[in-house]
Length: 152
Image 1 (tube, rainbow, N blue to C red):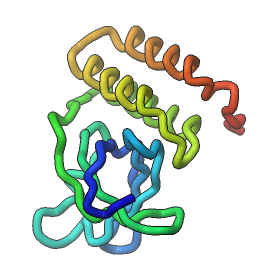
Image 2 (cartoon, helix red, strand yellow; image 1 turned 180 degrees about the vertical axis):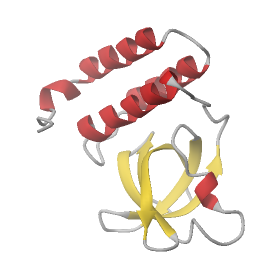
Image 3 (spheres, rainbow, N blue to C red; image 1 turned 120 degrees about the vertical axis):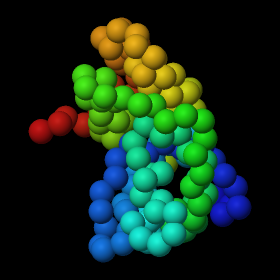
């Protein structure tokens, strides 16, 4: 990927890495699920850690040749999907499905769009069970269930 190119992405998982960095799992429109490291994200001006939260659509640029890319730039794209209570757990469930079923570097652009739509519907107050079932049916349509590894 060209480091100057910004692509749509969402953080689906994040954890601390060393003292100042974050290890992210991004779900992107063009490249699918991509691991990335955000060096110095927890320190410095602007504190990027606040931006790199789940359920926040982003425009990102990545660089690197190895398995884990370096996050060079991240900008907000649109609104943050403010999920709380049961809907927050539903959002984490969606992210867990993506972590478990989508292989790294396997793009699913329609699934990405459906993911953002599902987050929007959850944040908008639609019944959570309808939103989740629609997303699961969309996953069935991609064929991801048939390639899923057992959880245990």
